[in-house]
Structures are given as structure tokens and as C-alpha cells.
Amino acid sequence: MSMDLPEGMKLIDENGRRLDGRKADELRPIRIEAGVLRRADGSAYVEMGKNKILAAVYGPRECHPRHLQDPTRAIVQCHYNMLSFSVDDRKRPGPDRRSVEISKIVGEALEYSIFLEQFPRTSIDVYIAVLQANAGTRCAGLTAASVAVADAGIPMRDLIPACAAGKVADTVVLDLNKEEDNFGDADVPLAYIPRTGEVLLLQMDGHLTQAEFNRAIELAKGGCSQIYAVQQDALRRKYSIAAGENGGKEEEARGNEA
Ligand code: UDP
Image 1 (tube, protein in one colour):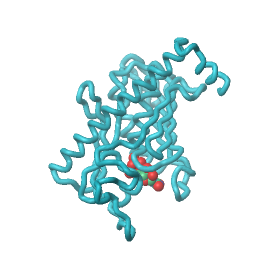
Image 2 (cartoon, protein in one colour):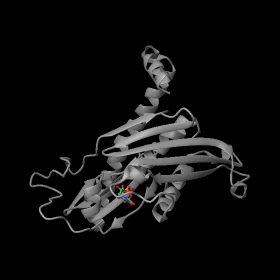
Image 3 (cartoon, helix red, strand yellow):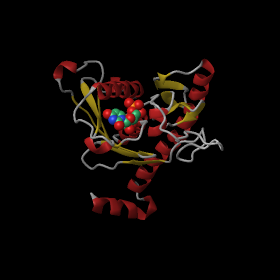
Image 4 (cartoon, protein in one colour):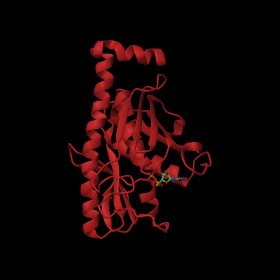
């Protein structure tokens, strides 16, 4: 955020187009697949622009470490991990401040949505692996994780779509990419449930006026609504295949792959 813009680089051109050709209110292309891992109880794969993210969910299962066990409800243990090869400079493996923060906020959003009280003493373990990062990975990670929780058959209030909005070159834009994140002025990740209007994650890095903030939230809510539809479609696709619709062809292909 707020690094100096390299000579000649224009984040928004005279036609209002961004470096990757998007308009201010456009999301990067998004693709979601549910149920991509055999071993996990639930899983999902998300591509959002150049981000590539896998989420795996195990549980509800016996809670380790035992002292975290809650006799009244399940806990969510979320592990966000950016792989060494996911960024241009090799990322030092293992947890760091950033991954601890992201694991915490993503886990809290999931805890809010899942009916935890139905599974006392257990743990729901959520693993988010960032295979390729290009800004917005906490949002894409939460988007993936909530599809994986649904895929695991864990009862939840709703899916959780998430995306960021922010400010680059004096313009409020949706879903910042890496260059926009690095050289822009502000980044506001939001998780928002369109059906209920609830906000489950909201952060801000940088500075915005009140009016710019309101516009950023409006854009991010619009982005979440679009992502929500893609999440639902991913689950529908998986279960229509499992139910033998599509002539079972895709399931055969998937079975051979695994
Ligand atoms: N990033 C990186 N190395 C790091 C951490 C982050 O290259 O050690 C990049 C990565 O592309 C990431 C982006 O910086 O997506 C923005 O990171 P931020 O902390 O804002 O989180 P995110 O936007 O991914 O949720």
C-alpha cells in the first residue's frame, strides 16, 4: 500500500480502464470448484484473477489441543498459509504475523456463520493454502473456506462471500490486484452476506474520506453479491454431478482423476 508508483505506470488510463483492463466497478474473473480433494470432509478451489487458493475442511472432529475444547460448542481452527512459491520473492515458510491475523479474522467469520452449538467439544479445522497470490487472498480464502464448510455438510447460516474495494489514482475501485494494492492508497476487505445484510469481516488499510469509504463499501457489497452466486453455483454443480445429473459423466472423469 502506498509504495511509489514506477515511472510511466498509470493505474487508471484516460478511458478509466485499470492496468488489467477492468473498469472501476469490475471484479477479476472468478472461478470456484467445490469438492476438489478426496481426503478432506469438504474442500474448494478458488481462482480470483491470478489468485489460486485451496481450502480443506475437516470435522467436526475431536478437538486438539484438548484445552481448547468447549463443552457448549464447536470451535473453528483456521490455518491460512501462503506457500513459498506463491509470490515473486520466496515467502519464508511457516506462520508469521500476517498469517496469524488472517487465520484469526477468517476463522471468526466462519464461527459466526456455522451452527457451532450443534457440535459441542469438537473442532472444525479449516486449512487455506494460497498457491498463487496476487492481492485479496484473505477474501478469496474466506470465499473458498465457506464453500468447503458447506461441502463438508456442516450446517451454517449462509455462505460467506468476500472481496475488497479500495482507492487507486484517486478513484474508488473494486477488487484490487497486486499492483493496485502495492501502489494504491487504500484497501478495504469486506465479507458480506447479501441475504441478511450482515458484515462478517471489515478491515481498512490506508486512508479514505467518509464518502470514499461509503462508495468502497457499496462496491464491495456488489462484488460479494456476484461472488455469492458463483459460490452457490459451485455447490449446485458438485451436487448435481453427485446426484447423477449430467449423465454421471463428469463424476466418472473426476473418479478417474482422484
Ligand atoms: N504478498 C507478498 N508477500 C508476502 C505477503 C503478501 O508478496 O509475504 C503479496 C501477495 O500477493 C498478497 C498481497 O501482497 O496477496 C497483499 O497482501 P495483504 O497482506 O494485503 O493481504 P491480501 O490482500 O492477500 O488479503
